[in-house]
Image (cartoon, rainbow over all chains, first blue to last red; front, side, top):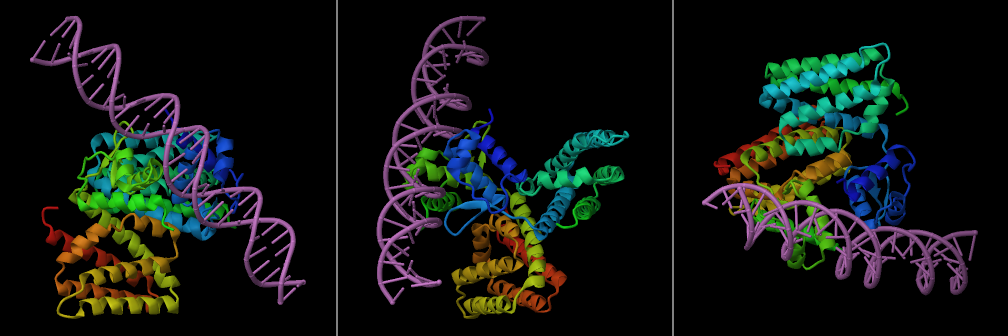
Length: 214
Length: 214
DNA sequence: CGTGCAGCTCTTGTATACAAAACCCCGTGC
DNA sequence: GCACGGGGTTTTGTATACAAGAGCTGCACG
């Protein structure tokens, strides 16, 4: 069963990401409880989580408002992701099992298939891409890394980036994944780290050129 | 006012760190509420936090037990700290203000004073050391980094390390801080990053040699 | 003697009630 | 006209009550 707390988290996060709640908007527990259709208790837990993930910030009194993310913030998120996922790739290169390697290959083939035709299936690309990165993080076998990265991988940013990707950008991602798989097969931690870091830095670049104002 | 939730967090964390609750011990909300002297609600929030910080893990059912940390875990924590605090130092080198630099110098002088005499004041050393690192993180001006590092800087590890430091090890820390201050004064981000990373890697080494079994 | 299931207990998840603190608005004094 | 309280209102923090699910115990049966 999906708990009421998770439902509240997903819905409130959705409100923020969709822009229904713009930066500075107060997040009142009771009002949100009415919207989501649960009581204050699970809403409260959801808000704590959103605060921890910097979707919301707490004012001097105990009140929460939607956080504002500027370009510097986005750059910092990508920089942290590059570091941490690079580290995850290095760990994964040392620990990966043959089965996990096969799973990565299959995942990346599905990803390539999604963008192979004339009309790339961006949604499927995103899903497989997400899965690919999750597999790498899983192979790194570090619970700490996993939770830290979970709070960093902001689906909205990925989405905004990918919807504006030109198709050969998507292809390039697939090729970088291939390189990563090669590094894993060779058990070369430094190589894997470098490929992953480059992969994510390029994603920031793509994001930047797609939305210049940010 | 310090909230009941914070009190519960501090007390339960204390129980775990003191070893009163050894790994595998179940953490039941009502029992802890009785111990701390508050109701289940704030205990629940405290437990969520402890879970997020990997002090406790959740079993297949929804129950929490005290987490077991092995040597690999400790190594991973130090590796992450080296990366993230290195990054923080680099950011700080670019952004630091003259005032913050002065504060760092004063802090490090206090730290040196604490270990200058024949009988080093380890408790004071630890407090000033903590403050020094917090000042650096503050100067890095990244809320994300601050929260990530907060969940990583495990006071117990620092304590266990420092209590076994030989005095010239403490002095060496102070000198490394001096180097860091020089790098900040020179606004040399790469230098600052390298010094900080080395500083933390040495701390892991000291911890390792002090407690070989872990 | 081992296995499976029924019933019960214990624990968590959620709702609601109450307490206390923060905010806001408005009137008052300067 | 503006700063400053004061009181009501809103909002969060905490306690408690209730519901639902997980796990344990012990008995029956193979």
